[in-house]
Length: 267
Image 1 (cartoon, one colour):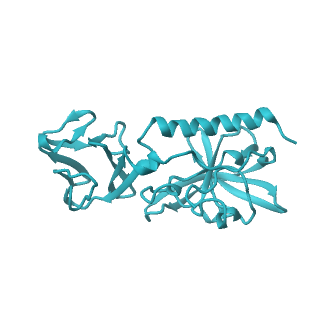
Image 2 (image 1 turned 120 degrees about the horizontal axis):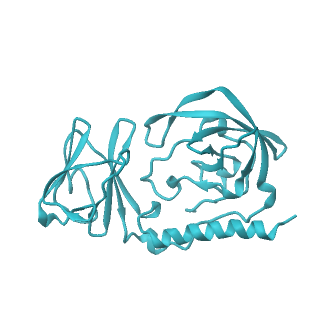
């Protein structure tokens, strides 16, 4: 049985997501570089090889990064031309700094105990050729009611991302639901006011991104929740090799097929 209003609501969300990519050129499709910062001086053009010639350097000392460049370098920080030195706030600070040079946008990010320079190009080919993300057709049967079995106490586990750094992740419970003739289970990560499920299923073999997808839901007050796999999305690593996506926990590698949500972006 189909529900035209429900199907249209999902399509509206998908169209809006495509439109956000077209309106904001600083997105996962335009990500072109991820450079680990070594202690000491990291010079543009050598340690940091960019598609545009830039003079200057990022200096890492005692866990802090300083950008140094002369006015003729064309570097800007938060819209202001740089001439000299400035301490850079990372993505873990309240107000991370945005570094710009021509069509390039850069930000220092922290992953574990490692610092990186992340680089976007607002003129990237991936943006110019973007025609929309790829999805399975919306099917109401993939809006599944699940039982939430809570962990007491919540479980804290080390999780890895694709670049090999670790973080502590809190899982509050396990969602259980029947599908594809199996009893499926997914552990739920606490994500502020939501629960997040980082998972793979058998469609990774042929139709979906092999590194995994994710689904977020509002935290339930009781012990049931709705898992709408029509809303499952790819991690950014599906679009670029320069993202730092978390790997799905072992418990969330399903052997069932979930032909719903986002499909592979690159064939």
